[in-house]
Image 1 (cartoon, rainbow, N blue to C red):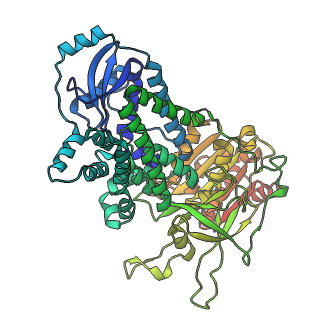
Image 2 (image 1 turned 180 degrees about the horizontal axis):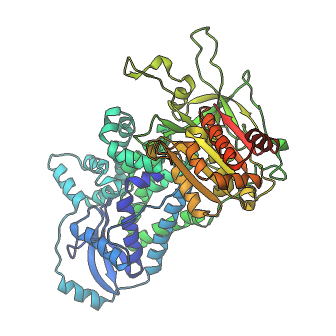
Length: 627
């Protein structure tokens, strides 16, 4: 749902800020015409409102368009608030938190509106204002479109359905127009709902078209880059978040924006349609209440929203402890090989998302798989994946490939029912063809990166204990070194220690230090997550990147992962001497460079390298998983 917010963040957040500043002294009342040409900065609805400030009628407001005066009104509101005019930063939110953001916004606006409803405008003051501002009656956008369509002899119901289908008006603008046309609400609401949903079905399918993707690439790339590493929640929570977003009649929300968000989230089409339909119906009821019942109806609808969202607003973060050992650091019960090659588990893909930018070297995807809580694992373990089909050489099933799990044991949705993989699509560039050779592409990685929501994945494991976290001593330092998708187990570590409310995280007092080596900035994985943790836990989490095509090492060459680690060799060796654990994960080609660097550092310090590494291994401080 964060993807949805990104599509309309400027308009939506500007409006929210303006409303938040203005509502304590304003009351909104339905009307059918303007008293002045000034409008508030609202869009996406065709209801009219009057504003009263300090007991005086100020202006009539139409929520179906944004005039230049309205845009300047935003700037004025921003200046009034002491903030720089026109600059609104969208906070970095993960998908788990986005429903709370929506809930808080709606609840705040609802309570403010209800609180100010008791302010009444003295008749004398209202009359004085009306005398100054002579009424200027004109039709708003929805009414103008309706009259234009009526001129072709179309039935009013058809006109209403067409208006509701337009992205400029949608249902929230269609309902007031239908009542203005004299149609009963029992006709207006179904016509508006069906009209609003009519273009959404083909839109969801058209968004899969490659040409359309290229046409919309500037919007999609910006949205996807910002939302790529924000994590993915369960389908149920995606459904609820999207329905709430579409159902809140605020500027920038609606079925069209919802469809775009569902596409970016990778939601199954059936799930997206049912969620958007629910949101459209909710918006129809709210707008109808405001239009039909005036201030009382609007306040009742807002109160209902406040009650509905208040539960989410006041509910605290659930504690993550239901998958813990007793005590939590005891590794005797670590699950291993629950499912084997002859009897694999069938998981179902929830989402598959590209998580690198357009200039990255290759494609890397974050894949969330539903295991229904039947496939428990611990951070640092791997899943085996058996790609479908058979080998060409002998007709036997493809062998199982191991992938480090990229989530904590609770999964990205923190329910304990999902797990995630971080997979780079393996391709082979043929110099003769000057293109990727499809006959030499990675069988399993391409299968996983091509999965869609609902795809089935045959899985084995969980496997391995070499990369587990030793949690008995909460002051232990962890040094995590990764190249590319070797970042996967460390994402599980960091989420367990800092993101989730786990016993391990509550007790942890040490420092987790992450080194990641990739080609360039576009190839960074989960950067938003690391930056958020770094901001919240500056003493307990450190982060260093080695960007081989953008940085230089001290010798003037490319900055590889071993060069970045060497920059801090004194501090790292000191930590290791004091019991820190060091982890290496990624392509096996990373280890020769790492070992040569460590040998050089040992030689400069007068340390015998083999004895040094042997000591770390004997104390179980040395962890390696390369492929």
